[in-house]
Length: 444
Image (cartoon, rainbow, N blue to C red; front, side):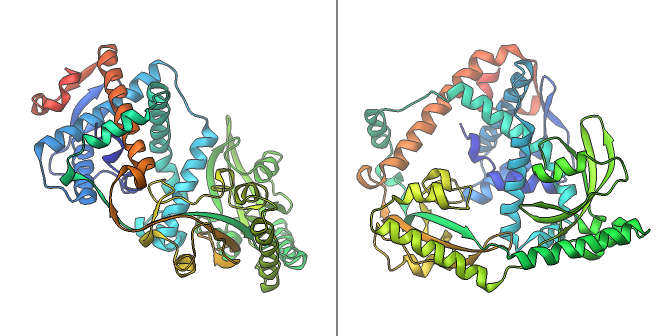
């Protein structure tokens, strides 16, 4: 099954943001209960897959991709029948994570907005449904194949089934752990931010327009151009401090200064609509002073000393001290774009590339200052957990990767079997142009 390979997670994100490609003749080529597949959906996924894999065009490949799109819609149709849903805060979290990642790739939020010619709020509004559907499909697949496991014998059998001339060639890779500390903002800098917002509040109460001042002063690039307006959100979709202050207001009301992980806010409630509410805000982020970086450097140097002297394990130190929520509960392990802990050297952050290049496996670096994707000053120590030279795949050096591939194949077979058993439970109509697609035989 082509499955997750059709369009990468970020390519799907970009496709959703740009909207389907325009083709001379578009239309519905498959109906699965209330779900549909458009010709443009297929063409876009097909071209994206060709671009990513460098494969030659093939009608057989296009059929495989079409089958995957049909199967995805069947998952959604069955999820609706079985009342399978995902929590809205998980949708919001995943949406924010992908926006942050893509912003980092293009050089910041402003460039992202310029690239799509849309505000961050507009992009998020358009992408929320897509993200929700992807998470529902993941949940369905987990229910179908989540308990599937592979034995060492199955892994060995899978590896032996790969023709010798088809074995992948792995470039140099590393496994890295990190412990991150953000630079703390001084009391003086916090007070300066508060004072500015308090002065702006006085001006608004005296009659100046909130939206106009938001455009002039707010440091939230995703909403400043819209007068600070965030759009409608449900409960638990915004950080707790912001939500609590907003929900205490009456429409038109203005909060006092509210502190959150993003900085300091002045909030105005625009409207409530059922369980949703719309607000605008002015965000001021306190600047980070050099002295705070020195404090973070000192803290991490002390943590490194404890690790090197075996007073605490790196994984435990990451869990207790790291400010990076994406890795602290995973032993501090960093991941590649594909989600693997094996990171190709050409994907390693330039800030640490030359540091780890001379380190041995098991070594922990001295504290390294860096700037996060959202512009925060931070410091980290890095542990080289593993290194590999360029080589052809083999069971000794690449067992975890081969085991993962074997597991994915077994899960794919389990999902295919599920489709065969459930295909008759929903209405499916395939366009005559694709009726002869052999890959769709299980749906006939």
